Every structure is written in structure tokens, then in C-alpha cells.
Amino acid sequence: MGMAELLIIVLVGGALALGYLSIYPKVAAGNFNKLSVCDLVCSVFVFTLVGTQYWGSDYEFSLLLFSTNWFWFTLVIYALIEIPLAIWYFKKYGVAVNDNGKDK
Image (cartoon, rainbow, N blue to C red; front, side, top):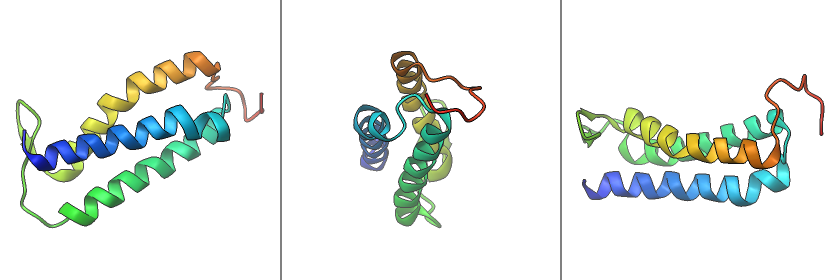
């Protein structure tokens, strides 16, 4: 694993940890719609930072079995880190996916 891959993993992990452990509980709590907006902002932030560095470059990122560009590497890493955090958060805060926009 190269330094570029490690930096993206640290950026994604740090942004998601900050979001799920500090920002989301204060802003969204158990409201799925607010949580979705907060997560969209977080993902746009991460992809913008990574994109400004690697957009148009020919750098290949290693995903163990294959190599890819910065976008797909970031997307896969983002999903791998976010899914367990989201499951934990949904259970802890009782987030209802189909609450028809009602605040808890």
C-alpha cells in the first residue's frame, strides 16, 4: 500500500469518525433525513479533497485484487468504513429509515 492510499484511508476514516461520533448525533440524532443530508455533505467534502489532488492524474490505486483510479478507490474505502459505522449509529440512535419525514 502506497502513501496515497494510506492518506485517503486516513481522510475517509477521520471524516466519518468525526461525523458519526460527534457531528451527526448533535445535528441529526435519530432523524434519517437530516442524517442523509449530513452524510451527503461529508461525502462531498471527502471526494472534493481527494479529487483536487488526483483528478486527471494517472496514479493507480491498489484495491488488493485490482488497481483503479482515485474515484473508485475512495468510493470503495468510503463504503467499507461507513457501513459498519452506519449500522452501529442506526442501532444506537434508533434511526427509522421510513419515518415519512417526522422528527423524533
